[in-house]
Amino acid sequence: MNYYCLVAGLPDLRPDDMKGLLSPKELFDELNPQLSPADQLNFRLLMAKYDNQNFLTYLSNKEADLNPDGLLSRDDWEYLIKLMDENDHPSDPLLMPYWVRYYQLNHEEEIDAKGITREDYLAGLYFNYAMKSDTAFLKQWFEFNLNLNNLLIAILCRKHELDAAKSVIGSNEIATILRTTHSRDYGLSGIFDQLELVLRISEEPNLMDREKKLDALRWNWLEEHTFFNYFTIEKVLAFVLKSEMLNRWKLLSFEKGEAVFRELLDTIKQGVQLQE
Image (cartoon, rainbow, N blue to C red; front, side, top):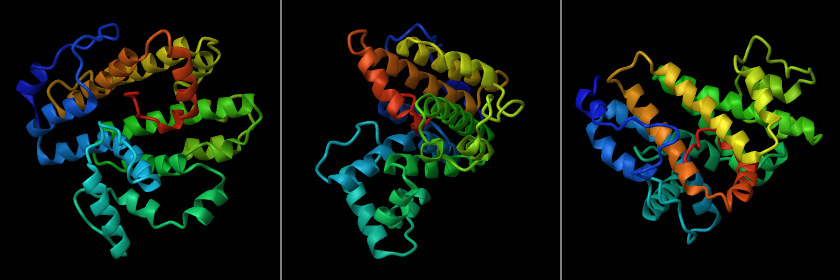
């Protein structure tokens, strides 16, 4: 489906222009009603990263503040948790299938035995689910980010002599390689096109400059993969993703930038969470 009026009305985003940006939730509320039902599901899949965060927050503390960019309210979470408690095979339009899989696990034994965090485990389920999308653009976007972030994690683990098997998420080919490789090129030569560029970026000593270069890599990917998409959902979703990047940089002041990016490095495996 083409969105001639919608795409024509979108502003031309530039990496150095952070004026007049809407928050992810505001952008969703503005754009989503103009999309077809099928494309609304695509948009919701992008936004699910905020609800993933709120899902874990709610499970930990039902009274805790939720991320305002999440689409589900506290009442929604109360309803969904009750639904999952009372049904072996719960079904509801609000319910992401991978949330059910996560919730039905024995957390103490099954997740903790793997030696990974609950955030990482849920992120892995999210990526695996998203990479089965029928929309090629979304499938490729999620896989690109999974590969990028897993490579960054593997580089950090090797540098600090940590076990990458406990930090790499997902179950695609590159994730499998990175969990066990000891080769200089991480076993990805000829498999991951951006390998050399990411290795160079990882050597950048300034954390803020490093993260900006990684976002530039993501921005260029979006440009390349929507070059021939003029009025389609791909153009709309790319606009949303770029807007999230700009919002993140708008929120980061020079005074707190260094501390924030240290936190970002700790949570980098969230992949398409491009809005921070």
